[in-house]
Image (cartoon, rainbow, N blue to C red; front, side, top):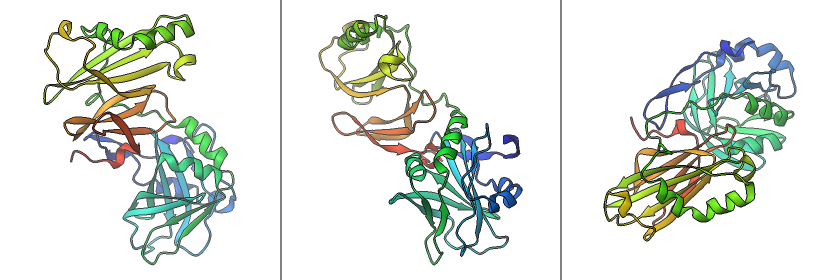
Length: 318
């Protein structure tokens, strides 16, 4: 079975536009029903971005399952008996693995139940021996053995498609900027340490954002060495100025700038319509696949990670 047999439909994302999502992949489950029922371990077909689950414990209307990764978003689709009445399948469900509980989005299809699996649940699912799914109400828990899940989920991770990054809301960094010298001065110590450690020149890009109330948010990224700055080779820092004195960059000195943000190997976005005291929420998306997106919010003094997110679950714009 090829990946082309998995049909894509539109999905909504917190970016406020459509993106490719898989609200139901029951066609895949149906095609694989007999082998799935016979197998006792998780399996991931070579080169594909989905894994087939073994048959679940008997006692529920669920007959099988597939977990698929598309653009770094994980969907667990559970096949159900034709015409099965399953209450409380729309809304939220609870995944339990390795003693950890995860509240997830759940939706009912014609013959399936589709769950969005958070990135933080992957490692517990790899390490545990059993996955339990609770739909609420009077439904009996759905249980799957996790034998072979580490190998299968890891294989799916390696084949998962990269996120298609939207251009809107991206904080665009530039090398040819009037603010470049300010960036060099603010990160002088980091640049010096980078050169000493790598014997390479640092590549800088910057971006200046005007904030209401005569405030500014300034990003400075250093790139050049995956040995020094991890797999992406880039580190980005953010600085806040709480009372900008003018629009001419030559008038801006180092005084008044405070470090408020730092991360490695990410694109940085503003979350549409979301802010705290005028400071925009930030979303970081890794340059390399396989790592979670993160939501950053203003604490009053700096930015802090509020948590990992599944971008498709956030609907800041209708």
